[in-house]
Length: 599
Image 1 (tube, one colour):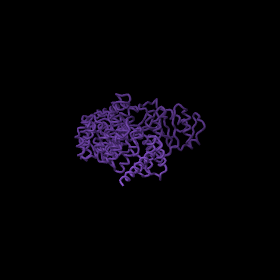
Image 2 (image 1 turned 90 degrees about the vertical axis):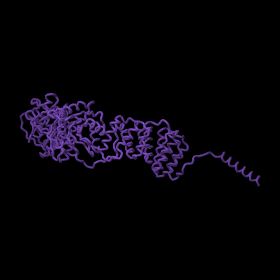
Image 3 (image 1 turned 30 degrees about the horizontal axis):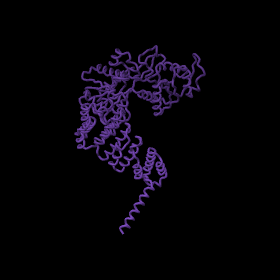
């Protein structure tokens, strides 16, 4: 019996060995018989080399994910050896594995897939950032916010792209303010921290438990004083939990009045000359007012890029009012900043924002609005436009057309005037687009003949350089259109009166800053003596600076319902979105010189 049992076991062992020799090992993949595309990809993968096979399996897994076959997709991905793949392909496989794990609330498994040791070597900086972000997401799902932040702090040092660093800084901050006080204290006490880690942890600890925004800002100012070289000081994160106002709240005025103003302007670079003119206008107005209490400090906007940096710099200089910035992008940043600890007067308009600063600007839409407003008030609802062949001329044409048509006006024709072409022919062809002029205009002009030419056009808007206007006005007269009112932008006037030069402009009415056409103020008289550009287009910037000073000294009046300040750039009144409305002055050329229209 024992001998027979031994023979039987020997026979079975022999059969097993023969069976093993006669078969080849195969990789078992999940059954996907119900998905032909996936089956085809997997079949092709079995015949392909390692890299191509991994690509095909990854594509198959993505199709299965789209089809909600998550477990099958995960099983296919498990069969891929990521270490021997090109960096991006290996990272793509690991990323999909990690995302599927996170979706199933398995952050530990996700971190396993994202282990650097299991991935291809020589990842690029962009790929490392991608990996850090995924690892941070996994740590955050574990509520391990400190390790999540460390991942992103590391990632932030892998790039010099400011928009990427800004995004990473905001993500870091979001994680740190989610951490508990115990977690933050423990992290800050870790002696293994580097400079970057420690700075971030102490920044978060500085505001831990503080809910009042103003108090938070105080603490962050103190932190910035100690960590001014830290990346979070140079490029502060945007607070993801900041409360955004749904409507504009009243502007808080300094309790003791404005004592020191910070001018935030570009002291270097292409706009330095503009900044210098604005500053001189401000200082001259301050001196003309005989002010002994007001003080002024200068901040270089080329070195300040965020609201946090601005308020910190102004505060350290003791300023309680800020004039600037000029840069529209910066103005828009301020418009979205939840609270301004220091009142700001920006020098460019903001887009719609939750908390815009006050805005005083010389934008062309003020003039376009004034022209249209006057025309509509006078019942002029049929117009032509003549504009210079320049960018500013085209901009004026667009602004005038848009507002005029919104208010019920009709633009029958528009001329892009080019002084190098026939002046007479250009004006004639424009006028012929008025049906009445076309019907009644004679074929040719004869010296001394009296012609009764009728017209449907109520007004001609002119947005041209002065030199072009001096060519256009005589041609309008020549082609019997001298009776049509002409309303022009300030470009028509060069700033210094000259009867001999501007006789051909007689009859044209135009809008401009009081600075250029009203009785000169002490500030303007001073600058006319000191500067030869005070009355030019560039000289309007002196007026801008002067009005910035005027506003700083009269904020309570300006912010009163219906409050109006009579300024160098116009009569100033607070308008929608905290932008100041500038009511401009009007003048008419009489005997070659502008005469102020006072009624």
